[in-house]
Length: 146
Image 1 (cartoon, rainbow, N blue to C red):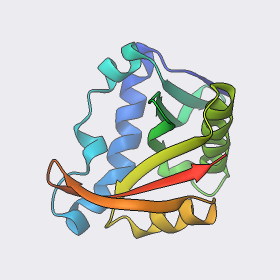
Image 2 (image 1 turned 180 degrees about the vertical axis):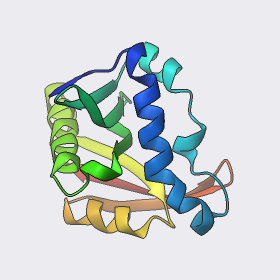
Image 3 (image 1 turned 120 degrees about the vertical axis):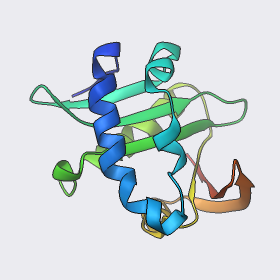
């Protein structure tokens, strides 16, 4: 069940972030951007949804409205729940949210060292638009026309 995140979900989201992004620290040479976010503030601003499975938060997604496209800012699934199709559920939700909001496209970015994510997004129809270095992180920007 997907639902808007509340302040009660902060701890669960932070546990998922730690588990999902810690393996990339050695590859990137520092903590990935999602590990540096203030999730309490993001939840209060809106756009954060959690995937609640049997009363346990097993994934989350952050969607931010932009002028020309919905930004899929972050998506993570708890490692113990990976392989169950929850990432697909979250991606489908993001694309439906974009359509419902009247956007013709959805955008995202990921670290260039997260090659598995780039391949996953490419399989879902996202195409690379450009690369940039921001906040010391080398990012790959992608977009999907809906």
